[in-house]
Image 1 (spheres, one colour):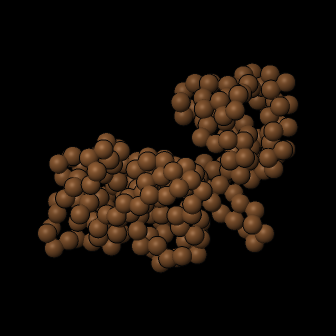
Image 2: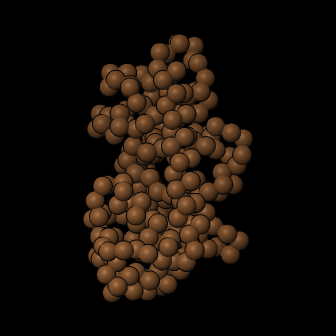
Image 3: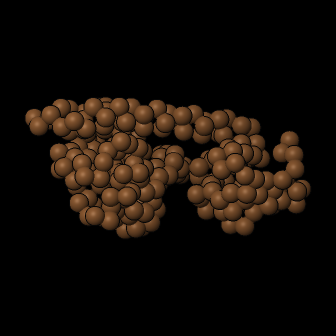
Length: 223
């Protein structure tokens, strides 16, 4: 394992409570494999079977879903220290999303059977790993519920206000930066990009918010 990866991996929720001196042995036990991807490269394609969990060491990935006609929506995005694929790797259902590198990225893949099983060496960290994996799955479920809340709002304005209000609550400030460019925001909210830009401009003129690229400030009454 590259020594420079230690801080990122130790920040990963899957390795909560793991000491730095345990990390190398643990990754060997879990059959960890490191792979680098270029921006725009597909990491996993929808429909394939996966038996690994991906941990992002550097870069950022998008979790995408495409319909029959090729229109895509962003289900989520993840950065250094985040996991992806755990819901599918822990079951038998084929991958229901496509995972794509949003920028040059390094991914560490862990064998799920080794994560969930007890190894012959009876490593003391296995019980902690399983507990942490359950916590990760619960957090992802809450994240999906939040997105459903945004998408269930009627009209583009309500979707935008729901999403931006949540972002503001996350940082505890009316000024914040979102992780998407305008196209990414449109894909995440499942709306047309030009319609989104027009609505944001109207809201800015009405004094509800201000923005510059992906930096926003909420103002006034969003009713």
